Amino acid sequence: MPDEPRWVTTWASAPQLTEPGDLPPAPYTRDGLALAGSTLRQTVRVSAGGPRIRLRLSNAFGGAPLRLTRVLLALPRDGRSGERAVRPGTSRPVTFHGRTPAVVPPGAHVVSDPLDLDVPPRAALTVTLHLAGGHPAAGLTSHPGSRTTSHLAPGDQAGAADLAGATPVDHWYLLSGVETWSTASALALLGDSLTDGRGSTTNGDDRWPDRLLDRLPPGAAAAVVNQAAGGNRVLADGLGPAALSRLDRDVLAQSGVDRLLVFEGVNDLGTAPPAPDAQKDVTGELIAAYHQIVVRAQARGMLVYGATLTPFGGHVPYDDPDGHREAARQEVNAWIRGGGAFDAVVDFDRAARDPADPRRLRPAYDEGDHLHLNPAGYRALAAAFPLDLLTAAR
Image (tube, rainbow, N blue to C red; front, side):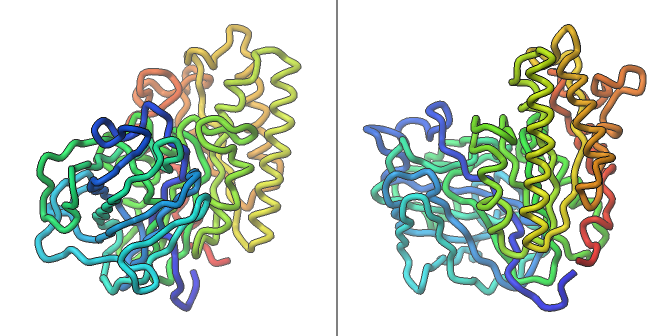
């Protein structure tokens, strides 16, 4: 754990290009513009706490400048994720180089000026945006798998304690990070929907990274930076850029991150043809990609951990009748466990599999599709993560 405080990412969401079905609903998307003349209120749950906070907003996929008219930071009224109202008297204007409006160039992000705000660990924060002119809908940056309710309202209601005429939507838009001034170690998670939390409870903060934070003893200084994206793959773009291509932005460029967990690859196996040669190829490419991730992260002085891939037996369409993808999963897991590339291994396969049928999830952990976990399953993954990997000295 570092001795001197520095800026540490305490919350993040991996930026993605907003698919048409995930755009803000009408009238908040119309005539090719999103969020024009509207207010967007979002909540996030930080991991490490600290005495100062700054925000990061992203225009990673925008083809035009992102023009932020007003940004405010507050505390949710009841301290919960997904809360629409803010606690009276807590709203603070967020500035950028001393100015209230900000312009984020296409493909870039902007970091706010620091705010003196003593935020405890695992607290919820509310960020409210007003975009007077909106942003082209075709290039709106978001994180669709928020598992947290945001709220859209007409006009400029950014400073209101509650929003009149608000519409709930379960996505995050434009907000990509929160940083705190801290001595905490910071673990980034590079993953897919299993880390993004599909099958968890909306506004329940019961993804496995949340449950891992809840295991920390009082006073432990550690941040968990969830950079997962549902449907993501290691090797090829799909829902979000491939892990290999987003590694620099989502992990290596994150403030204060000094360790990384890689828990991704199921979608690569599941989308490759269920034939021996195809699975042999994707297995070899995955292992080579993991090695590249390790090399690049270790070059930045990071500890790099590998997590074994959890079962998908019975899942349609990943589970092929001849078991070629299962054989590939076993080969990949054998390399993760025994290949010697990672500084430590977290055996999520062992934690989640059914002892009576190891190619399947334990029934009590199965969300229902035989691939994703329910809250009990995510609790089991969190329990399998050794806490000393969060705080081990570099």
